[in-house]
Length: 485
Image (tube, rainbow, N blue to C red; front, side, top):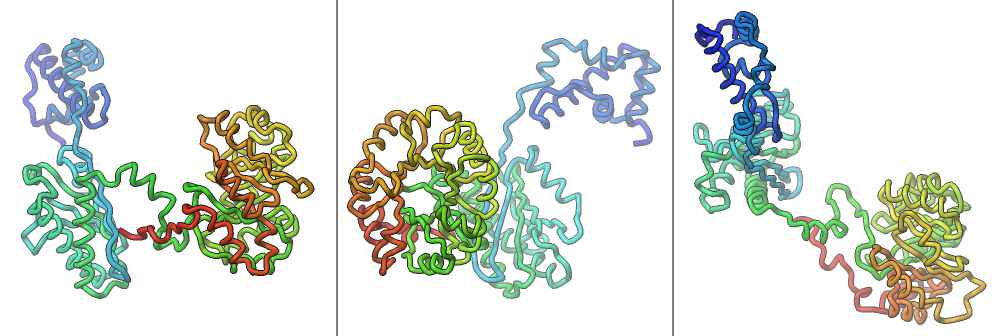
């Protein structure tokens, strides 16, 4: 703005009054946008006066007025009026994926008030063009946009007119029609169509060719995303329930977590790679099975053996049994780099080592497990730690495998002592189906088995001997999993 659009005040008093009112409006507007009390600025106040900031500087100098003194002298009532509690704007988010093949549709969208953050994003998107990602208004047909007005933003770079035709044709029409139908069906309230806007991010594969499917899938995905946005889908309960069951269709593998014990942990202790691979191929598929790269196997091949075994066990929870006694952080890092889901330290390690071990595992997002082999008082040992491990293994050595109870009385004692902790308890050491059943009845979460499986002539049958011990272990979550909604 090069010239003033406001008549110059004639007196200093008139100027101060004009300045105060403009500063008050500017403070109120900036506070609403930022969501917190904000002081007025000379540039912002000049905009509300509809003059150039240089003109305001000139007037301040001419009338001998200090801008800071004027704004600071506003009364407390005036400031509280200017800096009101920010208005709560509607800001809803929806997402949906529908279809298959190159025509698959993935929609991300925002819906909310024109005078709120969604409206700002709408205006910014429409006025700031980007090569290959030009936003456009969705229209049912030329000259007929739906309400609320919807900005369509291509996710994939539009490189040529063929790509543009898919966006400006079936995708644009599908999004617009879905919005219009959502209003007609009551998904979007009719009294909000002039108050809200929508920003819709659309994926169209460069190799998509079937216009009917592009329209069909984008219509369905947009309608579903709108419905989810208005219903604030998903609930936290839904997220918590599905997060460890889900398998991303593009990633191609699951990242399992230990969310539904009990489990059978198979210890792969044989230090022969090819034989270990053969054992894995004969293990029946079940979400109740987790694999442990045993200490002898790791000592021979290093932690890299886990990555190598992943080639035939992509979806399985893998544990690195390092029996860490020193440099806890370093050994966690070694296991993590080879994609281990969990790592085991020896309970005999110093508390400082275990603290570093557990801290690093939690930092990297993998499970920390502490093996209490030869630890005289596991509960006392756990009390010395700053952080609690995810899993405690009650373990007897090979030479002790003469009894039946395996010290299982410790399970309940440990649970009572640490009732405020999230803790899984595993039992190990010469486990056979009979002792496994007793351990499960006493509350064990994980049964660690080795030779009974790895030295069996019928590995699948040996594993099923354990899976048949409880009704829960006989269940396979794959029967209930919904991969794509």
